[in-house]
Image (cartoon, rainbow, N blue to C red; front, top):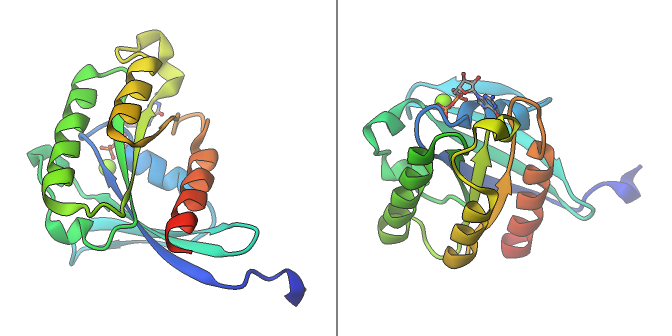
Length: 177
Ligand code: GDP
Ligand code: MG
């Protein structure tokens, strides 16, 4: 049905940032339902792609997932270069990962990410709300103070994961479509 075929495919570079153990790789695997997946040893990070269809376009997400570099609290500028969207992930059950997210954010604003990059704050492990150390409202207010988008997810249950990628796609399409 050619009439219904999206008019174009846009390439979107999305990087995952956040402390080790917050669930970045688990989220990436959840995003990646039916597309090819591979590890690129040359750039030192896992790389995969995922198509997201909107009504008038298809977005081809190229998802960059750090390969353990976050342990040293640094990733190469190559990682950020050209990123359309950065997911800044923390674990709602580990307050220090929320504190760390704010340090990442400062570094991003200072050094790497141009103003046009969409930064999305993600509170992951929403299924562990009984062990929550970061209230929902705190995530929301950080996001609104810094002009970020915000979602709580669970890579484990899948809750809000597809919705997150759809929302990101809509927002990015508004910027670059
Ligand atoms: P990364 O270091 O940020 O890439 O984190 P991983 O994706 O490797 O996840 C770290 C650990 O947290 C693993 O044991 C995952 O199974 C677990 N994990 C990831 N996401 C969730 C989640 O949403 N809920 C729960 N309960 N565990 C999660
Ligand atoms: Mg990982």
